[in-house]
Amino acid sequence: MNLITCIELHAARLTQAGVFFGHGTATAFDEAAWLALWRLGLPLDALDEHEDRVLNDAEQAAIAALVDERIATRKPAAYLTGEAWLQGVPFTIDERAIVPRSFIAELIADASIDPWLSDRTQRVLDLCTGNGSLAVLAAMAWPEVAVDALDLSTDALAVARLNVERHGLTERIRLLQGDGLAGALAQGGGPYDLILCNPPYVNSASMAALPAEYRAEPELALAGGTDGMDFIRTLLAAAPAALSEDGVLVLEIGNERPFFEAAFPQLAVTWMPTSSGDDQVLLVTREALELPQ
Image: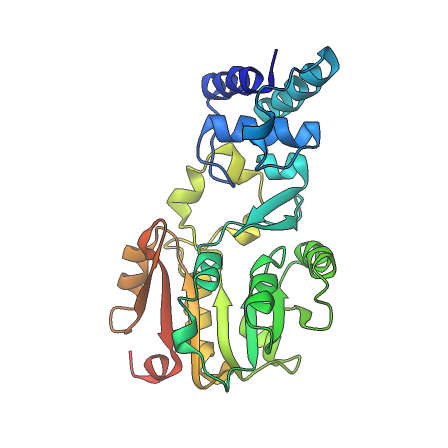
């Protein structure tokens, strides 16, 4: 059996088993290709040049066993391989942190945030940093800035440290443990010129309906209360004191725009275009946050 046939076979198995995608892939074929290429030790972007490779019995068995594990455990593929990619950058990941997939990464990579910055931009905070991926991407995109990366979870910060070290950014990124902006300010953080935040925002009804793949992730990184806005309410109230005069907050809210607008009907925000639409990520200025709501 050659590689492409093997992948097609296991893609059919994944489809039949009803596994859920969304942690780096969107289709059964892409997921099967990821697992097969990783198990063979091949680059994930090298399928075209290896698709006709004939697999021996041991290789076929190893791939089948990994797909078996994916189906049986319903763990995201990234937890099985120990690695995820965001904007072409590899990140170490395990079950101590949420699988990196923030749309904010797109905005960093395509320079959508840059018009809101200036030569005075010096300090950036990645709030709810998880495995540290946005902090790493920010440090790469803006070489002159210092980045704080904060999370409440010490487990997640342990994974973030692996990624900061992996990308040689220990002198640029400071890892902080604490609860929200108060935690950053208590440790000498701020004022920040830019705050990036992919917080827990999933509302309780959606949490109850999540596929098993999402329930394999730390609930702390997902659950946002009844309307998904619990953390965000505290964040927006505290943000003016943590932002510089021209500072901005970039906030991901996923599919919760109706709940966000119901909670903050008077707040003027800019919705940022992403590959999943114009209602996933918003930008708000300190000036807007200071206005009566």
